[in-house]
Amino acid sequence: MTDIEYMKQALVEAQKAYDEDEVPIGAVIVCKGRIIARAHNLTEMLNDVTAHAEMQAITAAATNIGGKYLNDCTLYVTVEPCPMCAGAIGWSQLGRLVFGAEDEKRGYKRFAPDVLHPKTEVVSGVCAEECTALMKEFFKNKR
Image (tube, rainbow, N blue to C red; front, side, top):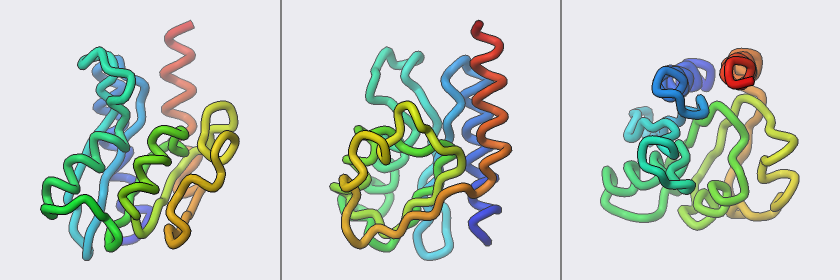
């Protein structure tokens, strides 16, 4: 599968969040060509500000592989990670991060651009239009 196909899977997760009245961010983690974790925001359901899609996915992936380091894995997430999530991505030594929409207000690149592990490859803008549209629709309905 390609980055676009995996991002479409992350968008499926984001739609689940949207349907549950959560901020519509979805994530999947791929290791050796196989999706090993799927997640979406659960902050409202769990009353937990740390229950972001990326955090849920990292925990699930680490459990799946039986280790805390995700060097051989790629995280696909629909929106640029926040500094908290980027910190967790850094600590997990994730091999690759692919995200869709940029988050100029709260994204890690604004507040903590050096927080990722130095070997983590970053690809941005994959399916950015679809990712951005879902976020805009969600917040439009909130106002």
